[in-house]
Image (cartoon, rainbow, N blue to C red; front, side):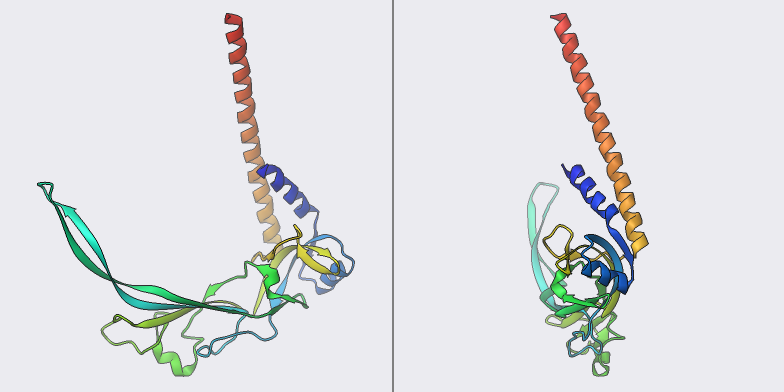
Length: 244
């Protein structure tokens, strides 16, 4: 059933109209409701979002807050006589204590505006804080973390707070597989958000072909195995019947 569903999906994919970064052809395909299309193009945001401590804006931001904390655990050892001895061991770690996210409400794809939530699998990257933080916070940056307080020369202390960020650029390229209907676009399966493939059109098509090849190989391996087992079972039962 899984292989059958994949074959049906691959058939939709192969028959889809392919559009390589063409605004005119994309708009035409929507206006004429051509059906399924595989289209590569530019995503962008009119006005991005940011945090006060950052000097640039983005399509999406995730801010992770960590605190340096002391922990304890019981460590037990057994001596040569079989006696167990336990002690309390202390250790320190940076623990995530809060996650804050922001995203734009609308994104533009090939000059058409859509809700941000219509898509998923946006590209995410770890933000280089030193080159993106406001000037007043530069002295609080160390090893790509932004610290709440300036770091001492002796390293972290219990209770210290630091931040790091993941972002989606304000402009990026991507490929989507969609259905055109009612003068707009939908997930090709009519429900759910639309995944963004971060490869260009040719790479996306090539990757799909490679997946089809693998699925076909798996299918034939399973088919040959099941056929072989069926023949073996038939011969075994047939011989057993003759002996009786």
